[in-house]
Length: 112
Image (cartoon, rainbow, N blue to C red; front, side, top):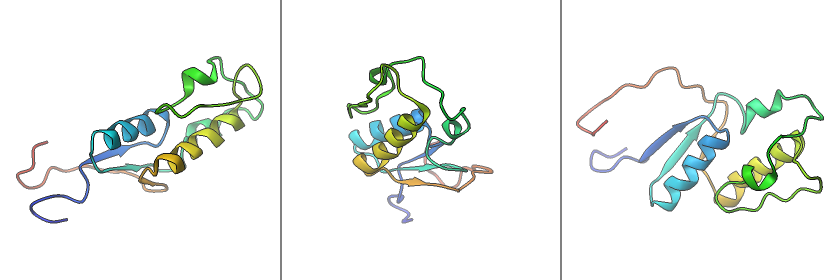
């Protein structure tokens, strides 16, 4: 990183739906964001039972205006995992998987 301008404007911890939504918003605001996750994109959803269906509709689970199209009335675990991975690709989000954040320290004169 340079002293004048850091390589990253925003660091987002967690590549779940909220972290991805934050990254999309940052991108639209012209910020350079990186998303770090200790596991994979939407890793919490990987722990859901295999054939579980969400209570919410796909429309309510969609991010950034990218349509979440499913065949059934409610999306399945598999649908959600595929969709959130597609979100990362579609928006070109800077997601770094398997990078655990152990601590964050303030350094220099940058505003916290």
